[in-house]
Image 1 (cartoon, helix red, strand yellow):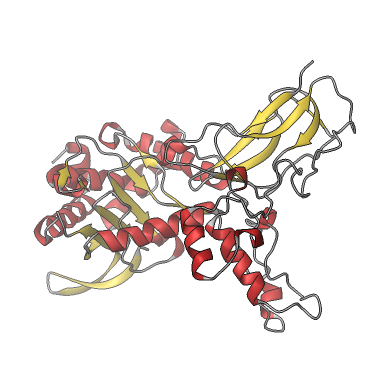
Image 2: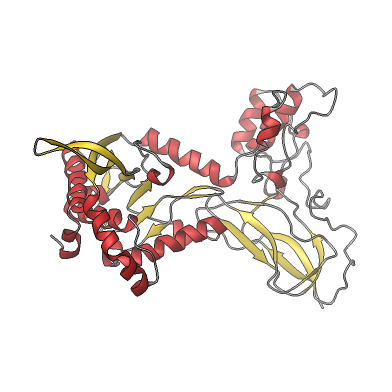
Length: 414
């Protein structure tokens, strides 16, 4: 029987390349059908690659840390093989890729445009750089790594902490104790997701005219309503009644009233969205992700809480799919879960506004000439001043405040 090929899953149109993390099997091992062989990291999600057939993993064509593209061959399986019968040229987990597929430094290696420019600026020959890109192409990272190696003197003794860990350890936790001892440094490459986050945040600040408006909200009415019905709500719907559903519903009310907050910029056009897809920022072991609640205006409080809980579990387990993270017309970031009192959230492009929610704390406020203690939350809404004027931004945030301070209006549509 012919060998079964293991290929990279189809990536989305916006994702050109991905990185192999760490093989869970080595060449010669028995594998079961649908057993996870390796995880592939894109700049959005981590994808699992299962074995298409049971058998023996004959060869690993691309090793840990390799850059791959959609449908690229990464391993082969012999359905009729026996354990330990690996092909001579196969590579085991952690070993260098087989010679035929290994990126090798050669005078004829093709360099990506950004890499070629850096090599020219530094008089660096392509023969001195090992390409790790598709088909052995030299990437910008390859050149920077070569320059770093060239500029560093040969070490006299092995350092206590590796200056640059293996690519397979990109997502490993930083050794804090080692960093604090004897003043060493630990260099850890950014994951693709962290690179993507950095890119989008810089893009947001460089392309949008970002301003932030603030307001305070007395959360006592929401707290009272939640305390009154939370047990019955959980019993009826099988999910806990949190605070995020109130913020999400209040945001939808304001977006309906002030459509510019739900719009986006496309060149010289303003795109008004006739739907409400709200991204909810979620912290995960890999970094910040923003899964999207779609058609929130058609969702009940229970639907919102159930979906947020589902996204939280997926984020922790690294199971978020590309479709979970795509799109969105407005976002909410809840720094209050970490104790934040106030912040200025950054817009998630191409969106034009984002709501920042913070920790609810008892504070002294003045009501009818008297100083009283109330559970207050400071809201911050950052907006793109290119299309949203201060009037719409301020009134939109006031609308959210009004809904939260009288949550019955959310249910009555007032």
